Length: 190
Image (tube, rainbow, N blue to C red; front, side, top):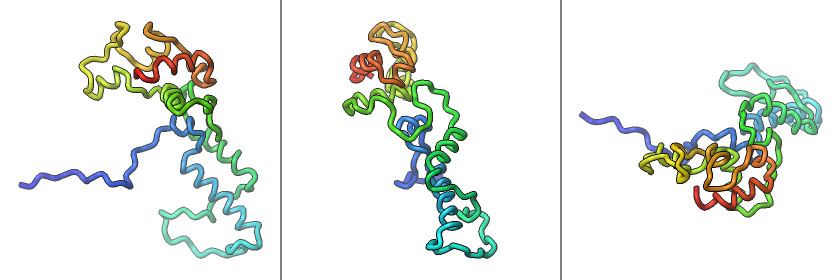
């Protein structure tokens, strides 16, 4: 009998993106950007005489799976950014206080060197290669912290570990001196 093999992973299969990454990058999710673009396109179609579909009567839709911009509400182009942020705030339910609320600009700390910026954003998203994570991936025999704590997690490193400085979610969000001291100490260790 032949054994069934799993489908190979192709270059077009992307892992699902993380909500935290969108907020640290200051970029609205793709679906929201697409929807807002469709809404502004609808506005142009309704008001701009130069638009190819201005005052056009549409035939009945044939495919239910297709979403045309002609079926959405229109949004003024100058209102697109606020409309996009409103949709993003409604859609995003992340409760991480270390990451800025949804807005289309980079968070504080963008003037840091790349290595520090990466460390800061990973700390904000609570994703670093801690002993707990490495143990979960079976790359380490245990999840013990060098300070003696049973579990070396991001929360432990940020607020409890005696091996280095501490900082809060507010410090990370605002990139304060405490956060920069934490970054300098931990960037090459985890």
